[in-house]
Image 1 (tube, rainbow, N blue to C red):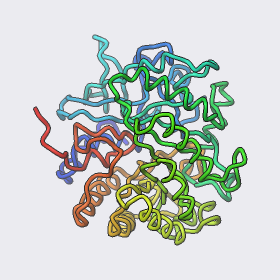
Image 2 (image 1 turned 120 degrees about the vertical axis):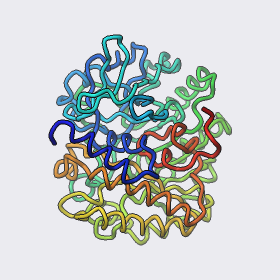
Image 3 (image 1 turned 135 degrees about the vertical axis):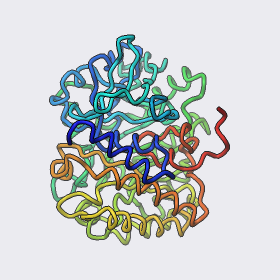
Image 4 (image 1 turned 135 degrees about the horizontal axis):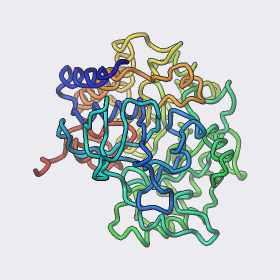
Length: 441
């Protein structure tokens, strides 16, 4: 793209889709295409004043660590906040995905104030998350809180990736857009601390530190997650493995946080175990709606569970958790990935909307993560540009319209909806839902 054309594209979409908040247009573009960081905008890792990117599960980068230059040595911030500028942006929290060749760049001006630049023009001020007090303390074994229990979404969510790899392994089983296994390997290769299976006592100790120093109670929820378990880990099946952390957390800190589990769509008895352990929200991610694409992109899930059974289990879990508390994720944008994906935005939106209608008609509100084409994944390699921005903007429109059709409100466990209020950082679905009451000027 020539210089200036990205700005023109973004402004054109803002004009064509006035119901989608302008903040969400920029946020989706940053999530789908990544951000370049000037050295002036990088953190001093765990020794500095800025909360660094924790690589909490996937790399969410457009390059491998060796390709990121200085950003591999001095981590960029975990997230950034956009405000103000010529578009008068309301406070927008964006997860950081590094792309040294992005048209968007974060840099400090001559006064040292960070801004976001597009096509060389400053388009907003940039806020970075302060280093939380709990990151300054280590566990008794010397591990950092950031390694064991990092927080994202501006401190709202504690992200507990208790199993850093996935047992869907190799080309015939791994989801084609997912770099969880590669991300594990690259951190090991770089000599970074990156614990494969987190000990339950370590997790509890990290949570104790967070609970002690998070005096403002900014952390409101935790997510237990990690790779799929097809056999066992430490002698436990998937429900037992993730469930035993929930049980320990809820016994030690009853009701302190909203407990969520991201696991496969499991049989009813397994799901009941999560509920019995005190988990409040279940995320059995369905990844992509189209039947053919599910088979092509999620070969392990197709082989071990199958799409129809996966969907049936999602509906069954609503009987245990209540429909509002079952929130399956999909990876927005892979619908348009070459070579198997839809060729037009119209077709992709029609397919995804069919999936939204299926779940929302049962009172289940899916959520989505904006696809980041990570270069070590088959879909990332084949589609370095990701999906077109127009797809992402139209998805926000379709998502909100479908929620309105079924009279659904924003799902629990995500903080407040609405532009200027949302903290969910890996897509704009919360930014583009209506605020629950008017924002005071």
